[in-house]
Length: 384
Image (cartoon, rainbow, N blue to C red; front, top):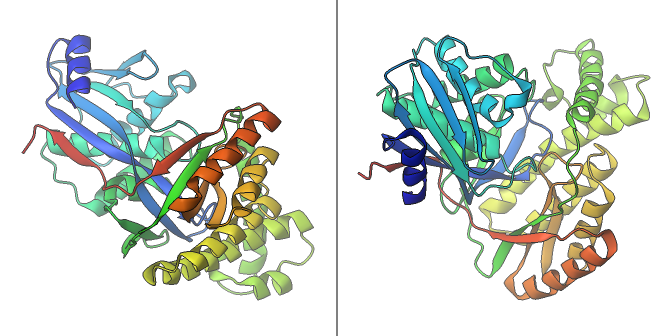
């Protein structure tokens, strides 16, 4: 907290009025069902985005990203999407949506820093959006209800960022609870808390450090395939998304679509069902069953939805071979990124040894993070 206060003061010449922290989000189950009204199981990470904010006397908007050593500026009357603004577009999407929801935003100085790895599926952008909207709500004494917050962020993603994917990471980033998973119903925008105790086990995130590629077109192609199937199914009986159908419906109702399209739809239908099974396992604290479901989820993401890569598959397979590992899978958007492994603490050293083999084979140094389940976004300055 002191660091970002000092950085804000050095940048803008005065202390921030408020500092907010928001966690990243870890998707345990429910990868790539967020556009199909599906279910997801997530947890808030103990890696954070920190946002400091203060009002200005004019209408200028100034943004400072410490980790990129970049500065962007615009005005409250000229909030526009610019591709080159990258990270700042997420801030602007919240400000844009606030204005369109009837909340007037004036000049602001904003500083952002954090320790969530970027662009690998740990919801760093959702954490930033959550921190921004919480800071605005407090700074302008809006007291926004949770439902309004979700709506504002969704509308900003859709109308400002032109994203057709629900920003599901906001649920954990904003509503996360220590030692609890979140069972998220994306159709009704509801959250159920699932208490979970790891005891003698851990969740390990492994960063593959595979060079990032532009994956938007790949994901959009998959969405188009799924929409074709939904259109065919909807012609037979009423439904609005793949959540309304099962594997029998896919077998009997989508006719002459390609095998690739059928596989991608199969992933979504199966993943929604697996996530409901995982909810039951978590309630029982049954890590063996949860691990098996994680393994099956990875197989589907690899073979059906086709968002894995050789490096990720190697990490998952080697992990699954180790005694004491319950399950391992890709998490995040895919095409690189990171894996999630649930294992006994006694197996961590053996797993670490396997990562040395990874570097020799692929030439990338895999980073291992032992993650803890955190609470959601909160105000940390001024201290109450």
